[in-house]
Length: 161
Image (cartoon, rainbow, N blue to C red; front, side, top):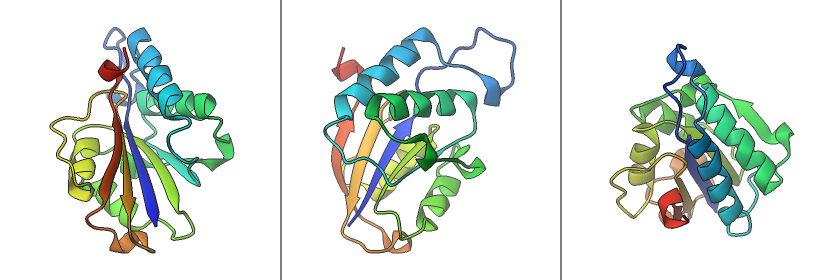
């Protein structure tokens, strides 16, 4: 069985004159990431591997989850393929994951996170909110063969406040 946890980066700040990749999290984003990570810590298994977009807001969100969930930093890899806004690159990336990984967590952007959740899960999500998390399970032995998985858990910050 394969398990995929998708996390959309937390709320970012537009208060700085920086490029898109360099936008940091807002305080609310930091608090929401802590809230969601704390909530799911004992609800899902620790991932074998964690992949993040290299954009600051995604990486900051990822770092908060690593710390809050006690995930070793050595499991983290940055990949430009997750700096995706349509979902096509993210879907291709997931399909090429090593089958040595049973449980994978990815941090990315919208619309990609919503697209992947809806393409691979069995529950329609209108919009995965910032710091939102979707956990999918698949009756598959290979990432390249995953298709219709089960949406096992969704956690949105507004539901925890």
